Length: 361
DNA sequence: TTTATTTGACCGGT
DNA sequence: ACCGGTCAAATAAA
Image 1 (spheres, chains in turn green, cyan, yellow):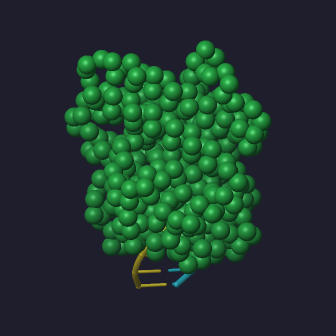
Image 2 (cartoon, helix red, strand yellow):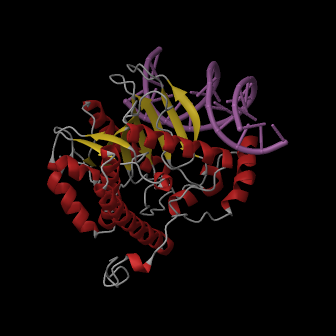
Image 3 (cartoon, protein in one colour):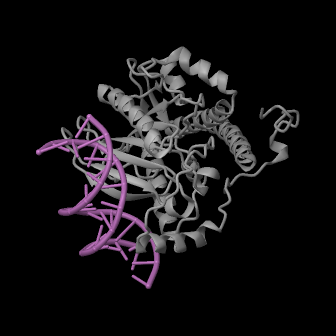
């Protein structure tokens, strides 16, 4: 928790500094006669930076505060999950209820209590394979045709399930109505190092390259206003209040920080900061600004809940053993967040109490 | 050779 | 019996 907090502090400072630098760039840019697009992009990035910073602050706010906020604005479902989603489909609501029941049922059976669940809606146009990049390493373990659904549902589990006992899973299903939209259901919280440190373990250079190109493409498309890969991230979050009174606070950045978000006014009210935009303008399209590549690796700052005390007592397959051995070597690398920012004292108002006690309280 | 994906089989719940 | 979720052998990709 200590290192996590530190990470959040760093990220917060990073975002604030980034916002400040971008604002300065914008200021310079305004003196030039060119590139309105560039200005738009800068503004978007500034907004995004402050948005994330505020999100971090918010998620570290006292629980009661968060609760009050969410309950004041959200339409509550029966059984109390504060369900929020941007989907116009009532199916999501049903799914949330159903999953909630499943969780309760599972809790009886296996003594494993997934604490929270997100429903994230991501869409992208062609050219991108789908919402696979959400900052975590997933391993596909199944695919199933679902009754009444055009497209099959894919099942993923955390790559580190066996090595670190991380039981996070997700399901990805392409929307019937809009095939460019993927409904992603997250189950369980990451207890692996990528969840704890909220950074990805080092990827292979190859993968890093791919990701980087991916981001560049998005930036370029936005900057040039051509063939914009419209990342419409309609986030929805489902917070469940559990029997023991614990409340887990979902928090997730969009799988990409570039794109366009839309929220419908009849939907539930998410807890996430993005949705404050939706509240202020209930049918607003919000363009997420492109940010630095590393910001794409901002997974959920984890409110660590180690409820997954179930023991993976199934037999290991040969590939699993291989996975354990091979992944352990990389896991010991202790990935260190690469924030790629520097604190230039000259750039910061020395009177600004970044490090005063209580600033991060 | 290692790692990830595919896909039919299997399982438990309804 | 049906359905959704998971397993694991086979296969593909790196």
